Length: 267
Image (cartoon, rainbow, N blue to C red; front, side, top):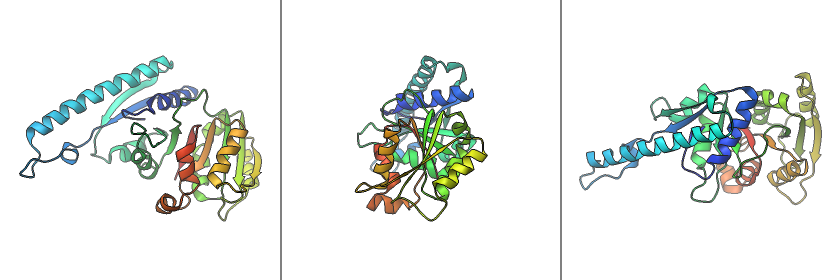
């Protein structure tokens, strides 16, 4: 879990500890050190001064210590303190994108419009550079994660991969529903095919086909998840290109902007 001074940290810790306790997992908070030469402004000669670097590093060390203590304290409060640890990483070795490849699940916060919201850059780095599954925590800490799961099935390879990587969570769920919105599909198997696939893996699931009507596919999916009382949404990330979704909107962009429940996502 990347550590940062954002409003999403309590929910991120809650999501991490709920899932971590279920699997008796180690939960690692990673503080990502920034490079002074990249962050700092230069002086009149175009060089970064030693004084600026020293000041930056002093502030960075204080921030790292503060966030580490907050993370470990929050894990203790959730009863997972003995399984929690903290590390510091830099850009060497790929930063978050490289270090995240050593873990089964990466917990990030859902980006928002507020200045103290988790940054989209962290989510995108984790999604596109680690090759791992993300657990995206909503702004408010949830009471549970993964008891009642909705799979946002659209026929895509991205979602198929996300489902395959999420089987451990799905096996622990009390209820799994495969939801397909009629306007948000690509060429591929229908929801019934995924239900059969899951059942062959020992996961009981139900099929639910939804008509979007005047709603976008992302909005219709979130509405259905709320109607079903889901506490986790499983979805592939960006079946359409990031640029296209940024310009024109799309299901992934809508869900990242509006989901009030945790979201499992991979690309």
